[in-house]
Length: 293
Length: 282
Image (cartoon, rainbow over all chains, first blue to last red; front, side):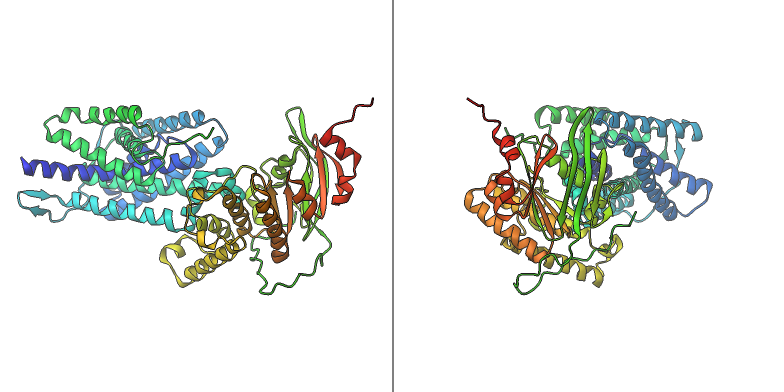
């Protein structure tokens, strides 16, 4: 019993760290242009296809394929921002949101058209020794996922807190107008935010494939939605919130499975969303907006 | 169109306190010609003609809704003018956006404080300084010696700027936690960080008590003297305007109704009419 719980917790941390990486992209983009970028989940899908294509069809080394996928995701995120969102910068938020949903459909159906609706099996990406802790074994992909995501999150925190571009990002997310008047270029800062968010999604995509080696056109939508719930749970717009939310959702899923209710996994995640929105809409670490009267 | 200077250097702070020689260069830093903007059918500002000397303190006054902040928004390209030209140091700013105008030398503060309240005081000032710094992301990640030199220089510069208002001890505080007066002063410091040649202050004394206003007046003059820059301010506090502004421009319904020194303005019948209304005869 105990070992089941421990191994489920490890599973939870593994999927949780992937949710966290994806949730960070949601949160960062929301923080800066108040857009729920529903195309974000599909970037993961594109990353998975890049890995599959470069390994199965081009015969590239797994590491090269994974790096290619991360680069492709980064560029795709920037491209989507330039083509779809930049022209709408002064448009109402709703237009942006609907455009994001449109981009998501475009990617999903586009890939379905090109590669077919079925799932493609991705060859084994990484292999290594697993770690035995008494009766519990931690698989190599699980360890790798945890280490890589923690390193990525540390790098992101450093980037946001300590670099010039990070300061610019925080300034733009607080007051876009004032930031411009202080000489901060909006295009560059927003583009950079999308690049970082999409790179994290790319890393998430690769780590996801280590655990579930399949690429399908719709794989991004459920993963993206769960990451979105994680971002809302942590407090959308908050970077530490997205990390906490991601791990919380992963653990919640794993514990539901551990209780023998794995059919209810998805239901529980969305129940969490409803409860958060009812009880604490600002999320765990989000700051409530106080209107001064 | 002349290119604006992208590589503007920080203005050095003179170590001595001698009163600098004034107006060596007589050409104006800012010149507005026939400047105007319409919002739909409404003309908010029209025929705005004004020139400000390189180290002049100029005042822009007028009743509420006269279009003063609109003029600031035109100068900083928050709004693109419908007509007219804005020359900054003799260079046409047509086609520039807000960021380019800032890099070209115009910095401003806001009527309602718009600090980055979740960033520290130091970070707020660094935001301005960074737009004139050179290093790129790889340098920042690798933390090369060049990066440290620049970063150290920027921090020293930020502290130096904060010391104008004796705020260097507040550097690590969150900007939003400062008292109101300090937030207003920090806005001025942040604007100075972008190394302007023209500083626009939108109601800098709003909400300040008389002794704070008196201190602010001294500091505005000190900023002008130390950095040798032009200052243009919108203000309702007439003691401040009349005391420190060398040139005053009065705006009413979007048009200039009077220009001149404090004395000219105080005796101008048009101005008295705009502020007090017309006296009913009999």
